[in-house]
Image (tube, rainbow, N blue to C red):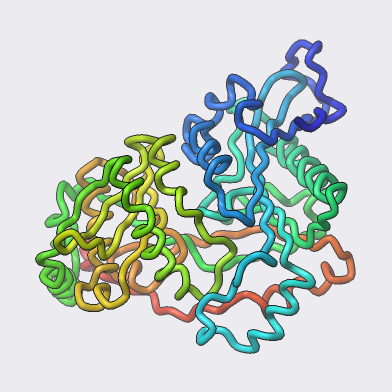
Length: 402
């Protein structure tokens, strides 16, 4: 366990009106977390102890997680997650055909941007960096979080690893305003692909209600897509089935991940079974089968009133023949409607097809800093050059009356 920050004094009594700065404590293992950790995580499963146990046991091989407690004297008022990523250990640019000047970009990445400290969760879209108590001061919490990031960089440096980039992610516009303070004044605000979110309307009681809200063009797309998937069996898989199919799941996942223009990690084979063990019914994995052959799968996570899509995989040839990906999107939406969720979080890939089924882009903003002050001055240019560009057209599938 790392030593507590100098302000952390377990002999002090809580003082909610204290003008002292907040302290922080960095935890390496989940069994070290304070007993009341989950009280602050109650509205975000992705900061819960059980989810963090998934990361501890089944994170990508190039990722190291730490967990941060923020204290007002002895009172836990905030919780956060950090992820260190070493991009030297993987092939980041997956689909080479989608990337220009790949040799130069690979060189620049490995030399100047391959060791990244993320305050937040690089495996998800949305604000899963921190949660805080209702009585906490957000400005004090953000200052403490900045101190925690500086300490983490120092910890890695002592072990021989120099952090290139420190990133705080993902925040909507109103949330990013809270970072307008001296601690973050020199940092670059940046935005990449948006998070695609489908708001579930109260009028929708079934997938039929949802499809009925489409214009004629998109009702036809829905009907055609559904007809293509006739003969494909879809079923929720138990923990035992997930374990027995781990090799198939890994191969299908890698088919999809390998075609992405850019990757910062690859999931280990036991990731999904670990997820199921830890989160039980809050983690759902559905397999798609023709006979006994698995041709695809999708995963979803229950997070309060939102249903989050997670990773999926499919056989490329069957995807085209069965319009498998489109049908997975419809299936996830139908599940969200039937289970009474308020929104379906689709994440930040395949933007146009997600737009065609009704998801709207939610701009995500992050804050970035480079450890080299000279490079930090030119970070906007550097970032824009290395970030893969995605050109897409937003669709409007619903009738005007909706």
